[in-house]
Length: 225
Image 1 (cartoon, rainbow, N blue to C red):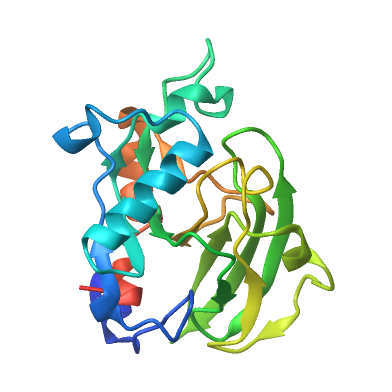
Image 2 (image 1 turned 30 degrees about the vertical axis):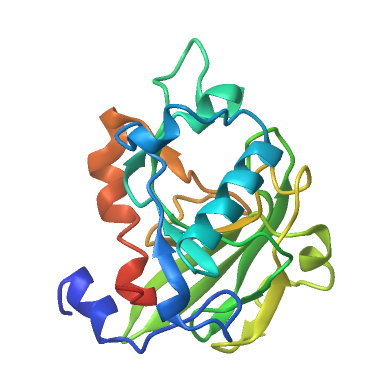
């Protein structure tokens, strides 16, 4: 097989949210500590982030903000999901976020089947999540869709066949979506490591090397830029 980047680059562009929005209406968003524009803005609650995202979209004449792959972020500090006394702090994002302040439809990136689904209810977690399994050219991998609404899990069955572009859910709103401003966390996962309905979307610096390989850049598939 080609190397992983070449494999995903050869696949047709896939839109996973609000397919009617053209990529020309997307704008990159940096939520890392390197973005000095965040220094003088209070960003503590989901509502703070919703206001910030909406202002950012308006200022950039955009309808969707995206970014975050391998980005270090401070926004996870409020949740014990990402830090306890026994583990390294997890603050490096290993999916790609698509931010839009509405309950947008979510679509399957590729043909596949439902691997698993679950409502991860802890503060700062995914909330409802759906994970699909795909096999292309004898290569099996997974796509994860996090921060959905509860109805997205209704009627789902393990092994259920889905087609590329088929609606698999809707974006969730806070607090159901883990209490974030509305956004889709989209992630490619090669080896699920036996997990079902959940997989780490944020890692520590000590585990970044592993996750960089097991969770390649989602933009290789989405092709936003």
